Image 1: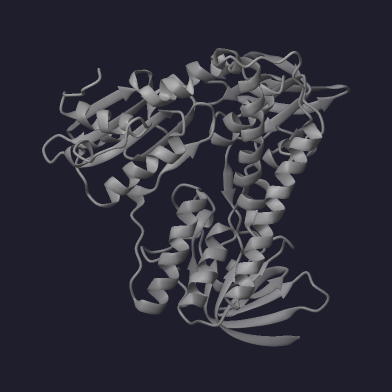
Image 2 (image 1 turned 120 degrees about the vertical axis):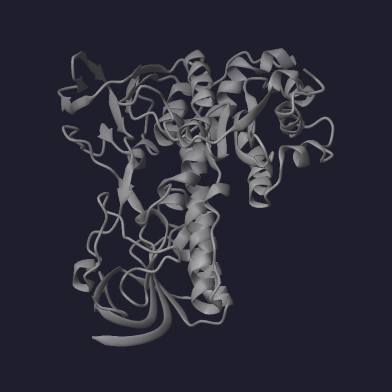
Length: 463
C-alpha cells in the first residue's frame, strides 16, 4: 500500500470540505481531499441545494406564466412544460458547478483522492474504493462528510415510488398524488415543485406547525400562502408506515385513515454521515444524535482531528459548513478563527420565500429577553407592487434597551437575498436605528427592511 504525506487532509468535498481545502491551500498548506463521488461538491451541489433550486426556478416560472402573466397583459393560447428539458437544465447546472470545483482544486493544487476515507490511527487515513488502497498521513485531518436523509420507522424506501429528496429531484413524470412526510425546507420546496407542475400534494408533519426552525408568526403566514397554491397539510400527525401496495403507495398514520398516493417523499430530516470513518478506532465519541463532538474551535478530543458542517452540532446548512471550514483552517494556521452563529441566515425557497437570521420571537420569549418588534408588509412597497409579488412582510426584533438587532425574519419575494442585509447588521452589532437611518434606493424591495426597522420605534413612514 502506497503512503503519501500531506499537511492537511479533508474527508469530504461538500461545501464545508472543498472550501476548507481551498482556504488551507491559500494559506500555504499541502492539502488533500478524499471524496467518494466522482463529481465534487457534495450533496449540496449534486443532489441537494443546487438541483432543487433549478427545479424551483423552472416550476415557478411555469406557475407564474399560468397564473400571473395575465395581470401584466401577457396571454398564451396554450402553455406546456417539458419535464425532460427541465431535468436536463438542472443536470447541466449541476455539471457546470461540480466541474468548477474540480477546476478550483487544480488551480489551488489540492490533491484529490477518489474513494472513502477510514481512520486507522490519528493522522492516518486509508483511502478505499479504488483499485489499490492508499494511506494518507497528515498532521491535521478535517472530517467534513456531511449528512444523509434520516430514515423513519415503518417507511419502506424503494428509492423509486417511496424515496428521499434524491429521487424526488429526478422523477421522470409528475405524480398525480404526492404525499410529503415532513414540513421542513426540503419537503416544502420539493412539494412546491411538483404541485406547480400539477401534482396534488399532501404534507404530513409530526409537529403542530410547519417550518419548526423558523419564526412561528412568519411560518404561519407561509402556510396560508402555500395552501392557496394547492398544498394540503395535516399537522400533528404521526406517520407509522409507508409502503408500495400494487399500483399505489399507502401511507399510514396513528389514529387516522391511510392515504393512497402515487409517490411518497420522505423529508423528515437528515442525520450526520459518520458511518465507515473508523471513528471507533480513534476512540471518538458521538453525541446522542450521532454527531462528532467538538470544542468551540472544531477540535475533537483527538489531537489533530477536527470536524465541521453537518457532522457536528448546529443547523445543517451549506453556508454554515463553509464558514466553519474557513474558520477551522485559519485557526490551524494562524491561531484565529471564529463563526458567529447568531448571524447565520436560513432560507426556504418556496414562493414566497422564507428567510431568517438570529433569534426567533419564541426563542427570545423563552430566554426572558425583553425586545421590541417592528414589521412592515410588502403590500405597501412600490417595487413589490410593480413586480406583482406583495405577499409577506419583514419582521425585526431588537433588544428593548440597547436596540441591537437580535433577529430578523422575512416572508416575501426574494427574501433569501434580502436577509443578507440583516445578517450583516447582526454581524456588525447594528441597531434597528442604524438600519433605519441607512439610505435605501427607491424603488426597491430592501425599503421594506428600512420601514420594518423604523417600525421598531413605532415610526414607519409608509404605513
